[in-house]
Length: 338
Image (cartoon, rainbow, N blue to C red; front, side, top):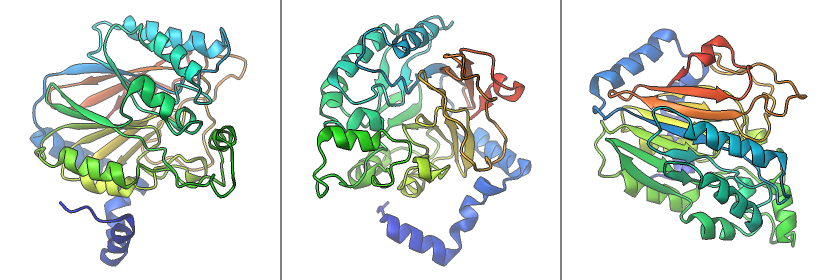
């Protein structure tokens, strides 16, 4: 399949009335969701069931014995205590707060205590002090894929922005300071950009449509709240590339919240952090209404936690939020189906 540009994609969408493709995002019915699930269950390739865990957004500081260190240690201990043990762990970005090598050294030392292998992608806090130099030195490629028990698993770097710093003659620290803001009106919207889109097209080219796919990004692959970069600007192109698959599971960090979305063949879930919980932005969440209760600012662990995702042989997945405090409503405590 020849990849089209974002502009061409959006132009085609307008001409062909492709808004219907996204109707499920705004007003899906229970019947339509069940119908999509039924197709996937009937035709998706059978896999060997397995469990994997997810940790994200630790935002470690270059400060000895910072409170976020202990919470990441607790997250690692929580994952190590899972029975049965997960097959692997995914880390969804923002290990560091200001992209300093000492922050990565600290984070890697803690993550290396995991009893199973882990794969990691960067967040914006990891990247913009030195444009990923220290991150790559510590962890290697920022986008990757691997196959596991019949499932294809993809990690992508979704926090790339166009150069806003050179003409302003910003120092690396100033550039990092801009990107560390929740609302950086100078920075522009994030994305994966053309090099990764080309890579993704090649990576999935020879996969059959019945292959189950898991994709992890730092920012959501849907427009949740672009003002806080709760979005990925080229997500429409990613979804276009992945639409040949019958079922895709997407997980993302950055928003530090329980949140869920479904668009076509892709079901997405946001993750808890191990640093702080963001408030929900002032937008109505799509159906179904899955969110966590208001956190107690006096409890440093409220709204934080880890995650375990159980996959059945038909690729039906259940995301279990392992919150460190009792703030999850019953419909989340029971696990979120992906």
